[in-house]
Amino acid sequence: MASLNVGNLGEYLREQRRNAQLSLRQLAEAAGVSNPYLSQIERGLRKPSAEVLQQVAKALRISAETLYVRAGILDAERDRDEVETRAVILADPSLNERQKQVLLQIYESFRKENGSGAGEPAGEDGAERGTDDDDAGSRRTAG
Image (cartoon, rainbow, N blue to C red; front, side):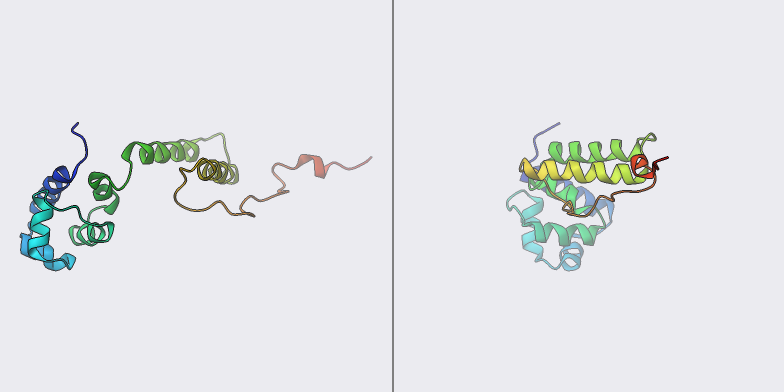
């Protein structure tokens, strides 16, 4: 696979625009950008901002994140690893929902601590404490 660069972004945008059966002018109008500017993006002459990419993605009805990766704004490999890790945790049938959420909060806090965290912050009181399922010790009675 070729490296991600502005030229690839332009080719991808052109392909998506054609798949949507939109002219350059129609897409520019729908995205709220000028026709010449969009043409320069498609030809790889300009690197658009995240805001412009978001507007174009909305007009094309595609994922803005896909455009961010193609433009080099997001790191595809790191983000893919994070998504895969979250998916594995959520798919584990041996964990209950509360345990999955706690694991995700711990994972996110470690990512933030290591400087790679993005997304929802782990809350101070996010983990439930003392639920009946896992606090067997507190249910014991002296007897």
